[in-house]
Length: 225
Ligand code: NI
Ligand code: MN
Image (cartoon, rainbow, N blue to C red; front, side, top):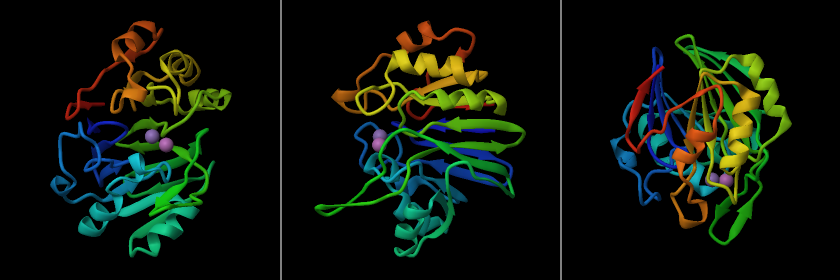
């Protein structure tokens, strides 16, 4: 399985039968390395919640690639009305798909969708455990530290993608504690330094994490799991 960091919380995940994006916030991200129209043949888009820096370019990319958008039922309803192909799930649900499986797991956050001057209810925010090519990746979405993360240790997570920027999510200190609960083989920091308010030094995170390898991915960098 190949993971590519596209900036903020956006990742490209490639494995047999899947070329997926998670939280494709590209055109609105001043630091993004690739424009959304560079994305081709995307089979799936996983959206953790309705905030603009996660829903991002989902509509444009899904329409262009006829991607299946996997998200909670409220977001699914919203996106279906825009003509997208969606698969609705909810917290705790797991489903087998052609590439492997996906489980929707809890996140402590919000999920409102901004449309003009209105905020539309976007259901519960979530994280995803995506299994493909015999590897499991946990994308935490936006979340605070929660004791529930302990349950993820039973999954045998290969790579945990964790927000470290603070203010809206876990900061470095809490993200380090989350690694202790989740016990992944590899931890990858995300959701930091895109904006001033979430400025954080991933090197500090790396130095503080015990018992797991930390890989800091620059925007556009890939790794093989
Ligand atoms: Ni958010
Ligand atoms: Mn966010």
